[in-house]
Length: 118
Image (cartoon, rainbow, N blue to C red):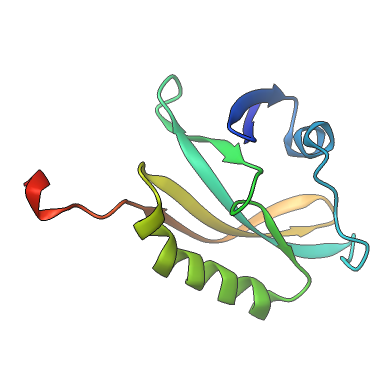
């Protein structure tokens, strides 16, 4: 079972492609359907005890034709997103080639810890 978050609500689907269809998140017309890159965000799921809820709303799920553009987005999010989040998230860069998903980069982002929390 695939879990995804869209507009703040968690839903389920059979797989990533069905979730994208249910959420109405389609590939832009300029995107190659054979091979493209996606920067993904995942939420922690307490029941699964893993990052298994994909965020399909912005800033998650950004699509690119070029590896270089996707890498810039990945690096930018890994640098600036931690200051905007309140819970740990997993940031991932994948290539989708002929409908197979290949993980290229992955990193867990944590919100900053204020001095008063120590």
